[in-house]
Length: 548
Image 1 (cartoon, rainbow, N blue to C red):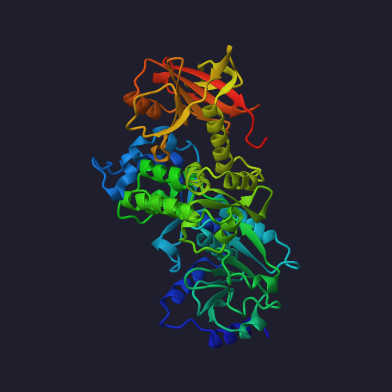
Image 2 (tube, helix red, strand yellow):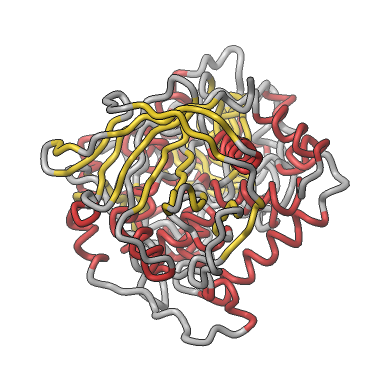
């Protein structure tokens, strides 16, 4: 049969119904975009630079923290968005972000009109386009809940429509919309297969309405190449064994991506940089969580309480079992506020797990490990296999450093000169001054509130309460001087003026010593606030890795 005859058959058997406004809207979108080519894509987009986005949000202030927080707002007795140093929520100048108009797609979650075209979406498009079809009949796009798996599908849809290539979309259980050169069709059975061109992409949004692809999409002999957006819950990916499908794990959002998309979020309360950063420090790279919690103090406090309760309830469950169950847990399960799914550093086909943030990692140590040696060893064994220096590695090294320093330590510290570097003063552990031998005697670990410092004692090893979001990790009184420790595994670490100002309010001193605790051989550099450079003495101390 010729193309005209096939088009007539399709129109008669699989028409778009007059009482289906969503299908009608998608048909109109297909008519607008079909075959116009990638050169037309900029006409659907807005491009903003990071400075413009920053300026739009920078004038907004978060709601002031309550003067007398109620029990429901307990978290904000200890910290608030106003405690976040401005340098922590800055964005890099010169970076541009492109937003795609998806207002014509009625299935997009969250009532969004524009979505950020993440680099991840472009990587996914190129990866899927290059997959060998003779050995693979589909792919499931996975990743952390709230990462934008569904939004990636709609980016892929628009790219295929612009290229004039056959594509199907299943966003509701009952119907699959099929977009061909001859038009748009609502299909619901296998009768369509005889009329399909090869390599028809079938985009399946597995969420509340759709569990897994419609059966006729996943027949082994069907010409559909399935691209499913889903969390790997039971029943959602049974189709993979029939199509020899692969996985594709997406990277989480970075801070600047979260900031860039904030102006496009439908929110009753305007989002602020300080509010977003406060939640990002707690619960990390889930854009959806940041936008949902950023200006809701009661909800944020409750979320922290829920995480602690969950971790204590899981003490009799092995960490490996918790991580295994993570993949099958519903997207709103509390475990997703503790752990994060990343692609392996060497392949998008397999995942790795880490803590969402250093804060949630500290909560695991406090509430799940809770000084149990067996659980601590399991935690170390599990995350020693992680090749990237993420939150888990940082938390375990920090815990090791706290134990080492509080039990007493003889070692050497090297002075770090503070020098002008371009426009800022800073330090670099590769440039050192005099070296001194030091003895830190054993001290009693004491958890304290940065906003209410106890009378100082030279026999205490002070650790700020987790929720303070303090900008240093511990304090001791050493030889009559207030000495701060900053444990870091990163290559950069800026000294925060806000943190020092907070400390000065509760423990005023003419000057302070700040010792960076790093792994043996590690190099680190950072900026020192101009107003504090004459009141700080910086040192570096190297200790062995906690994995040694």
